[in-house]
Structures are given as C-alpha cells and as structure tokens.
Image (tube, rainbow over all chains, first blue to last red; front, top):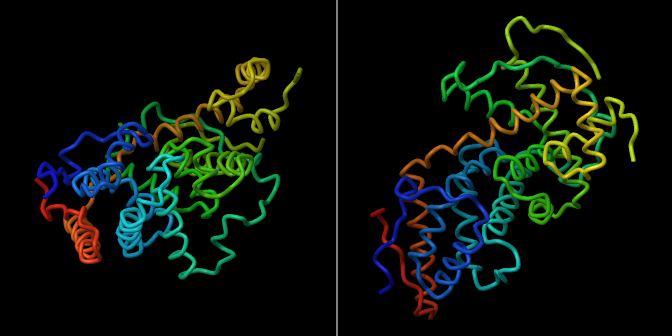
Length: 219
Length: 97
C-alpha cells in the first residue's frame, strides 16, 4: 500500500500559486512512481482552478464537470509522457483547454470557437467608456454580486479573447506559457490579451464607474 | 525612440506598461503621456483595476459531490492500471481525510 496521509479536500490545504515548479515536480515524480496520494494532492491543489477555467470556456456546467474529470484522468494516465520540460500546471491547463474547446465546438460552429480566427484589426484602440471607478468595488458589492458581475463580463468575451485573458490574468500563466498552452504565437497572445483587457474594462466601467462621472468619449 | 505619443500609441503599449515589460526609454514616454492625458490615465487606471479585481477573486470551492466523483474516477482508473499489470499503482482513498 502507498501513503495513507492523502489530503484530497481542497479546503484542508493552503492554495499554492500555479507554476510552483519544485512542489509540482516532486508530486509528479511520486505520482509516476505509483503514489496516488501524491496525485491526490495535485488534484486538491488545482481542481478549483481547472473547473473555473472549464466553466468559463464551455459556459456550461455539465461540460465543465466532464472537462474537470477528463482533464485529470488524462493527466493521470499520461503522466509517463509528461516530459517535465513544461510545468505540470501548464500541461494540465493545456489538456483542460483542449477538452473545453472540444466540447464547446460540439455546441457551436467551429468558426465561433477557433483560436486561429483572423483578428479584426483596429478594434483594440476603440475605447468608449472613460470614467473613474469607485475606489473599492469590493465594498460596493457583496462578494456574490461581484462574482456575478465578473463572471458575466468575462463570459461576454468571444472565446479567442476569453481564453487568453483567463490563462494570463486569472490563472496567471506567463505570456510564454499561455502561448504554449494555446499553441499560439507570443504576438498573438499579446494582441488578444490587450483586446480582452480593454473589452473587460469597458464592461466593468459600466458597473463600477464613480457616481456623477457620466461622460462618454472615444479615443 | 518615441518622442511624442498619441493616445493610440499609448493604447498600443498599454499591456507593456501594465506588465512593466516596456523598455526603459519607451516607459519614460508612456509615463509622460499618462500623466499629461486625463483620458489615458483613466484607461490605464481602470484597466489595471480590471486585472486586479479578477486576480483577487478566488475560485469557488468545488461541490463535494463533484470532488468525490473525480476521486472515484481516478480510483477506477488506478484499479484498471493495476489489473493491466502496473503493480505500483495504489488507489487513493475515496474520502478526504
């Protein structure tokens, strides 16, 4: 039998930022050697992030649940093919993104979810909402309301922008890791990230603008 | 080297300015522009806050039933691996400690 000190409940461990190579490398190595408890720790560490990512990409609860399970199972069964040149979390994210896009494509046309879709140049510099925010939106809205606003804003982005923003600014992967996970060029990641950030800024400004600041401008 | 930046130029460099990846020479011009252009300052400030508010949002806890299903699926896969001859595979407990 393997170790009996398995911690599988995510509430029982401190969240660790993604990409902590040393910690993951050890757990991956132990998992490869047959220590399922070690893989359980990787599950506990990343299951919430992977589920959030899958839910935002698929925009469907059932699909996100399937993605969560399939991504971890694929990672588990293919640990031997994980070469360790990338971080485990980046590898796991890549699996989850692929699984998510596959399910999204089943529900929509492939054109709508292609990450290689040509970009509409010029869009990135269109800025309409120019107003300062309330100093702390967190104080103005309950945690639940704030989650709802943020989720609605991010879900309104097209998949090509939403996915890049999620990886770079929510999951905090580097530009290089995001490019690797999505099989995009670094300039493509940068360009899409800018558009995603500006589009989200527009949407959130409509919610968080300082009362009395009601002017409208185009740069 | 950029001597005078337009607002469109500034927006083109916004990510590098936010992520602190612009070359020092360019950063200096971006800094000059953002401090003298109220609109660009608001765009910079609210984009920065957009990123911060998302980074500050912890993922929701996973429903217990979903977590249990995931662990059960891994256990099943592990058992199948053992049956296939991978004796080193040791199933995880099904319940959190």
